[in-house]
Picture 1: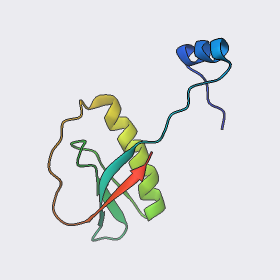
Picture 2 (picture 1 turned 180 degrees about the vertical axis):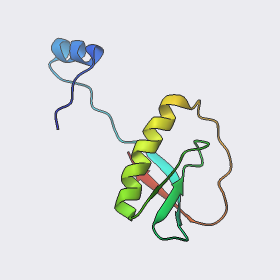
Picture 3 (picture 1 turned 90 degrees about the horizontal axis):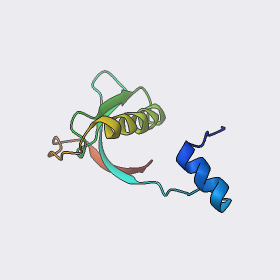
Length: 92
C-alpha cells in the first residue's frame, strides 16, 4: 500500500529525512451477536457510532472505518453503553 504524505508531513519528511510515526489508539467497543446472525458493535465514547458485519473479521474492519468516520464529524461527547454484549478494546 502506498501512502501519500500530506503537504505538512512531506515538508517534515524533507526537513528531517523521516516521517513522524503514530502509535495506534485503543478504543472500547461493545460487540453483540445479531439475532439474524453475524455481529454488530457500538462505540460508547462516540454517540451513534454503530456498525455490523457477517463475520468478526468483517465487523472489526467495519469498526475501524466507522470510528475513523465518527472521529472526523463527532465532537467526542460521551454516553453510557447499552447493557449486554461483550466489551473489548481494539487497536486502530
